[in-house]
Length: 260
Image 1 (cartoon, rainbow, N blue to C red):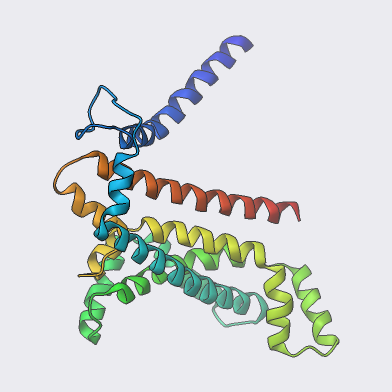
Image 2 (image 1 turned 90 degrees about the vertical axis):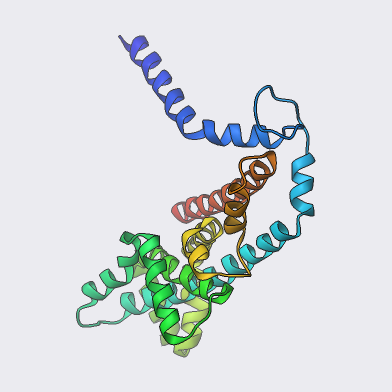
């Protein structure tokens, strides 16, 4: 019975991971296709389509825009999330539980609804569609996540360290920058990398809030409108690769946090 259970659990695990990763494997495989059409039989490997992607000005510009928006919006989201988490953890605020719920509320709202709301708001206040508007949208969706991660890592041991620094004469801004931030560094960096991952892959808000300067996911969508080809597979593989790197960095930082 134990052998049968072990065999069944192994088969189940293989089917589960195959179901999850088979589309990605096919995507990467046919991005290395040497011929024009991404259909069997496989005629690679070839880096022809990766070279074509890197030579495409629209795609490389979209890539640069995605990196710019992801980095700047993640920095803003982490900064605001850290300050919010620190304020809620260190000071008494009336109705703090309700206010914390409001901060994390966007996590439960569809990106489409958030994007449409921001589009209406920006049209009302006169902010044009641009990378800046998309960056603000990414801050809106990533700030609650950064807040939740950083707030969950605040503890009494940090309060004691901060109190000791104040007793030694450190002003509040030095306590925040030289004590609190280094102690919270793993959670801060983990929040930043996870925010980068979501911003890098995000399409709906970027599509709604940009016009001429677009991000890479929007450019991929424009390519897909003309049908599948190995070039779109190559772009998708690059996006997936960057996402994996960011997620691995996030997991390593969390592991380091647990070990410390």
